[in-house]
Image (cartoon, rainbow, N blue to C red; front, side, top):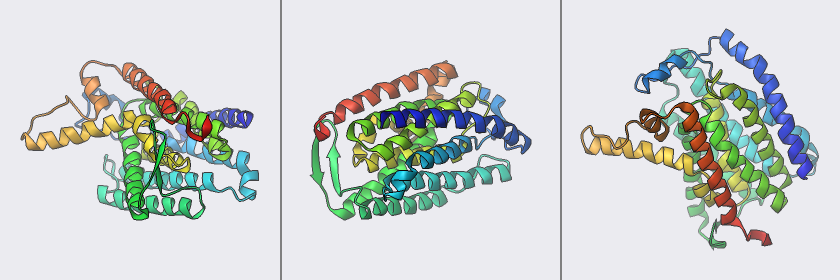
Amino acid sequence: MILKFILSFAACFALTVLIGRYLVPKLHEMKAGQHILEDGPTWHKTKEGTPTMGGLMFIIAIVVITVIYTIGDIMKGKWEHVIVLLLALINGGIGFLDDYEKLKKKQNLGLTAKQKFFLQLVVAVVFVLSLRLTGSLTANLYIPFLNVIVPIPEWLYFVLAAFIIVGTVNAVNLTDGVDGLATGVSMPVMLFYVVIAAIWSYQTIGVLAAAILGGLSGFLVFNFHPAKVFMGDTGSLFLGGAICAIAFALDMPLILIPLGIVYICETLSDIIQVVYFKLSHGKRVFKMAPLHHHFEMCGWNEYKVFTVFTAVSLVFAIVSYLAVYGRFGF
């Protein structure tokens, strides 16, 4: 099983890099350049025109490699990882529509917030229902650190699940604002899933997580500062969907609290900034939101933001491992 995870990682890394060498020039040729927000850091305007929708390179690679390495399991009726992949792909599809609208309008406005929220909510409910019907998910909440399971009403679980999924997807999307940031922060998250899948013998989920880790590693070749391509909403919504979907497939969605601490801080900084700005009639808590822009305005360069945020994510991936230590007897 461990060997299969390693091969899945390596194959997806290689395929992502291979696709990227074709896709990046193609996106340039198609003039699929990112429009940079006017109210962002002024130096980000130099990124204007950098191709977006680069997430397609790791999405394609992840799907191909996951199918190749789990086709035997699929034939035996093991579908939980397919359901996870479908949630990620549909969210990626929503992101693709958003990116396409932005490119068509030549501005940083794609689908409306209401349109994206509605689509994501429907997808989240269908996903949770699918896992419940296949027996891959219970209506009980596993509490990390305490190692206890709390039964809750089915309807409440669905409401909570929908909130967690939609929130996670958009939090990952919000984190994608500095070269390589969403990629780097998400790699320790996927490494955590690979380790847990290996220990708990979730072979198909482990193959998928290893493929995503390999895909992100390959994408970082093109996305590290100075970025040659951005993942776009296509990539970030796919990634957000995968991150929360795997947590549910492992039947421990609350692990996303410590594991996704960077995403949570990014989102909270944005919410705090907006609420305080309205209540105080124009005053700000942060120099700029979300949080990575605040640190940029404090003088951090993109290398430092990437390094520190990725390191924090790695530390909390270790904390998350300790939080579930003891479950299933390990």
